Amino acid sequence: MSAQLINGKELASEKRESMKKEVEMLKEQGVQPGLAVILVGQDPASETYVRSKHRACENTGIHSVSIKLPDTVSEEELLGHIDKLNEDDAIDGILVQLPLPKHINEDAVIERISPKKDVDGFHPISVGKMMIGQETFLPCTPHGVLEMVRKTGIEVSGKHVVVIGRSNIVGKPVGQLFLNENATVTYCHSRTQNMQKHTKDADILIVAVGIPNFVKAQDVKEGAVVIDVGINRVDGKLCGDVDFEEVKEVAGAITPVPGGVGPMTITMLLENTIQSAKARVR
Ligand code: GUN
Image (cartoon, rainbow, N blue to C red; front, side, top):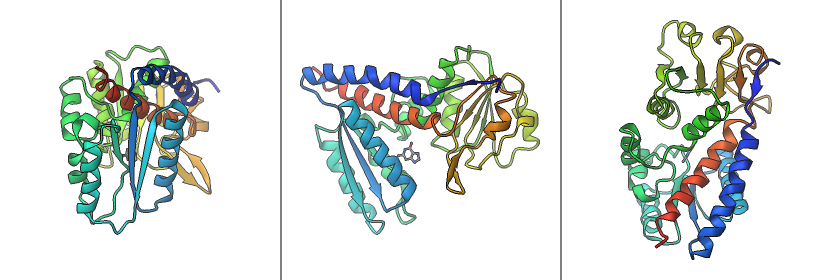
């Protein structure tokens, strides 16, 4: 293997150690950060993510509340829960696990969360502030990706960042964050023609398409930093959107799956919750 391994698990655990201390200091000032997670239905992947979020809160000293609702819940009732959490002084962050059942309007749910508690960074006000470079809650996965690239020590300014994928959760915001860092950003997606022409020119390649082993060695420039956001299950085994075995021979640095972006996403969620709680300290 020629590529440097970007160990998300290790970086996440370093960050969580310093967060524990921050939480301790806040508690001494009478404030315990609190996160509420709402899960609708019984999607096994979502249940796993939500469990990991609670465990991470527990380990960091953050108070966490879980609200589990059946997939038959009405939009009204879900919005009612958000209203209560918006008013709850012990709660600094509210996260509604996506996707939601089809009969619920996801946009309406996201917009109901107070921007002051929008630790996912999905509210249009948070997205707009990020876009114009104002301080706000940054979306967790994109922020985790940026932190991991920083960890490699390579300068982002002026580099060509290519993002494969254009979802509202990862693709679009991750490109924006790197643009804010003065990178030159290209977005590739399902309609892109001759995608390899773009990916082969990337200094930093960020892959968030949700297709197992989509990026091959021939798509990557020698020495590029490759960040794999994908989490796919193939024959019961987790794999990313990047063919790790092939690409690690070409890339300069690469994230593994699991143990790459995943642990960093949760860490950035904890960081946003702590940041939100600081507003309560007088
Ligand atoms: N579903 C997949 N990723 C995420 C995320 O980062 N936040 C929420 N709320 N739902 C998700």
